[in-house]
Amino acid sequence: MHPEIQNMREVALVYLDRSGGLQKFVHDCKRYNDSKQSYAVYRFIISINPSDIAELDATLGNYILHNPLQAAQIFQSVCFIAIKTLSLIEQLETEAQISILLKPTHLPPLPSYVLSLSAYPFNYTSQRFYMAEGIVIAMGTVTKYTQGARFLCAEETCPFSEGFRYIRVHCPGATESATVRTDFVCSLCSSPLQEDMKFRVLGGPSFLSDNFKYLLSLTSSSCWRFTAVLANIFASQVVPPGTYNTLKLAILLSLVQTCEKENADYLDLLIVTSDTLVIDRLLNYSLCLLPRGIRHPPSSEIFPSVSKDKHGTGSASIQACSAVLAKGGVCYIGDLSSYKKDKLELLQSVLESRTTTVFIPGKKYGEEADQQVTISVQTNFWSFVDVDSSSKKHIQKENFLIGQMDMSLIPANLVDVFGLLIYNEFPLGRLSSPLVHHILKKAINPEAMLYKVSQQFRTQDYEEFILFAKNLHVELSSEAENLIQGYYLASRRVRRDSVHGSTLSASALKILISLSKAHTKLSLRHTVLQEDALIAILLLESSLTLKHGTSALCVAPNSVFPFDLSDENSLQQRDIYLMQCHHELLKFIAAYGPGIHINANEE
Image 1: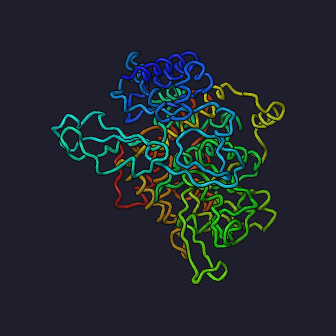
Image 2: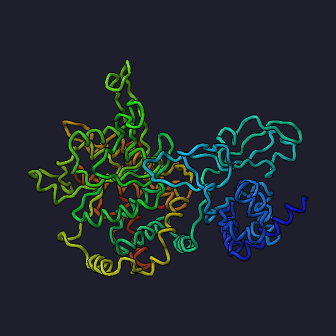
């Protein structure tokens, strides 16, 4: 080994020790080790102060500023030796599995370190750190790329057909096709290499906080308790624990059903309430848990529109707007009753097809022919309806069915395409006492932590939890699938009228599956059980009751949270209640879904 390289490794170790970086590194290693999961790539972010390093060793300081990729390899070797010497990660096998991202705290205040896009030369080919100064006036979509991948020799008798000999790690500036190729060959036997897809890493690995792990172990005796407590304590910075539980569960379910895949399991929410201020705060808080949570400003367009490119030749420019910017996340569009008819019709069309079409007239933009551009809309939508304001805008109908709400201000077809309709109201229209106290205390001291649970389960902990849960791959068990299909077919037979036939839309089956999968993810499991399907069915049936009135199944408005969750006894009561709901559901399917057999071991 070159003496200069060895010296820089020693300096890097000294710097990590003095700066506290080594202690953080050991903590990050512990989280990897505790997960007991093998990764193709173990990623570490190391904050560095170039000035401090330059004082220790000018060579390493210069290396970091002008050859950051090579400098990262220095720290990679140091970290690998530390892991092996201190036995920090048992699953780690090779140095190539370690990915180091160096993040400088600052750069020297010199002109050569400032990147200017208006001054020549642009120096596009440089691969060192720069500072960019300016005003952000637009943003593009986030491009997902493969951060790390594991390849194995296709020849089963080759020693490199297992283990972590061949690891590919994304380098800054590299294309996806350069990181993951199909023409790699084994250096030992020259057989082709095949990627082990189970170890492909798209984002940085996410973790669960120790408090979430402990909560999961405490509630392991029931498939319903973990998510119940999760919803009960969620957003305690905005609303008191124990309030808005059904809505908070629905929000969490929608958050874990966010991804950028085509034909994803979307879960849109429409909330009917008179507590618009509180609901708006709760939804805005929840948006912040996602990298792509967009609050739509009323003055702009929800969906893409066409305008002239003011900075170019006057050609057509498609503006992304809120829905496209929220790709893979949530687009919160505020009060639905504030939009005009044409906007609501467009929203309905997008919710049904998950695409929107932009028309570009050729004559207007200097083209010979007209064009149509179809854009995919991959996001969940959240909205609410203010019952107080809507009741003043129209005359309420009188011929309501039991449990049905007056939603005549919003087109019925639009209400149907929202996955869940949720009604949140306190008795006699008054806010609960805990919520009033919460609002007053927050008004006096906005930064105050009013509840111990807010310290135990921080916003950052929920961010990491959502990131972990949304990436879980879940599959339907045959028992859950039979329960969902049985309820769906029975409901289509029960919810009918003589004019329109079944009032249960064809999208209801997809919504049921999406809800069931979401509850499974939220429970941190990989298989959808009947217990998950039951929660999905109760939520959807409550939503259908608000839209069309009660059915023969006859669920209570608060069927998912029939009791205040104050202690373990109340959780036990809820379990018993949900088991009774399951029994009633089986009777409902048996009565109205002839030919459908549901296996119930509890019976």
